[in-house]
Length: 147
Image 1 (cartoon, rainbow, N blue to C red):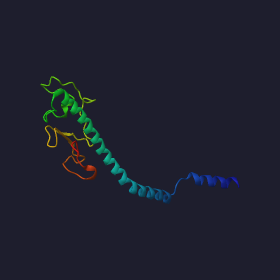
Image 2: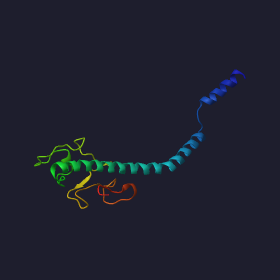
Image 3: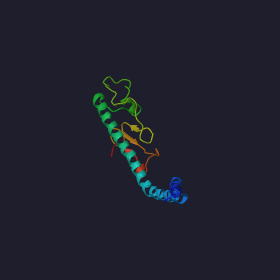
Image 4: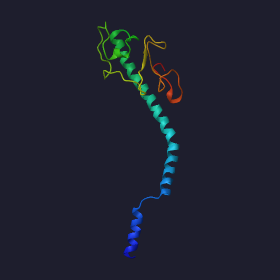
């Protein structure tokens, strides 16, 4: 081969992709995302629900420890903050009962709901999920302490 042919061949390789090649790659990526995307989003929603369940279990342990030391659960008006800061009039409070002094929000950025005495037990602790409203379906179900 002569030198001129080699230069033309190497220049052609350096020019990049054609528009048709780029469109084919984008179409393939679009199809893959169309098939995989909903499944990934499904798992993302269930991961947040599982995180909320773990938070509620952690709160449950802290609430039980509070109960053991104070002979009662925090009142509704004291809320979960009683686990981090001493409420007035509790001589046996030996907290904070959580690792951090700040009460975490649920995975959707909303506050957990706490009621004591509860309608379903000694206390009710729950998150309404992404919509922060009672009820919901699929990955937006309420996460509750009594189930």
